[in-house]
Image (tube, rainbow, N blue to C red; front, side):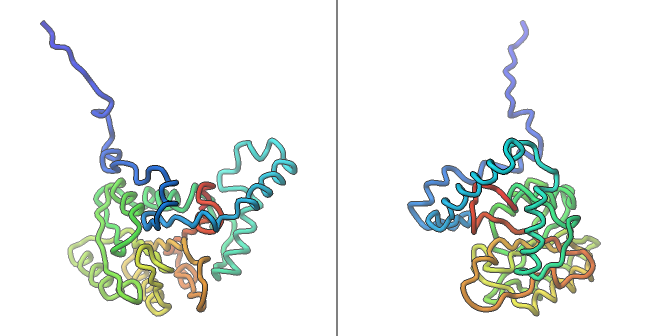
Length: 255
């Protein structure tokens, strides 16, 4: 007599799904009842609800059904043009249309970079502590995450250099270094200009991509802006991520 088999979909999961684990966030409305450091939730009272409603009305009246249709793969052209102006004005970044990609939040941009650069077993260096979503993305890709500490002045670049040298001595290399240089999540520190320059020098020397996650630079209330790591690089070894989630609407998912 043949024994009945009871298969489940879980046994078909890929290794990537098994590495990803459970969802990071439940009901975001719960964040309104406390100060959440989980995902950089913006204060709901600061979000421009009225302006978004008016902009939506204007866009629908002006462009009609095309607002609701599929868009260009690299992003809405007028948005790209405005972003190029903003990057030049606020971040000192000289870019062209070919350098820019609109994503489903900066988190999708990070996922695209990780998939483009890393195979299972590759090394990614990250600050510690850091944003939990980045760690989940790296682990889902099967990467080995090596960490370097932060101090009161941001990334410990001496520790970063030691890790890079140790990898090189063992015949390995890092594919990426992930950093949040402005108002780092969760520590809040900002990496100064001299350390940013050193990070670029190390990227050139050891051949890895710096992933500069600049989600918080538009939230500066005092002091002078520090040049982006991207603007200090002349060899294409820095990828710059940013988002509208903290200043306009996290739910719109624009990065």
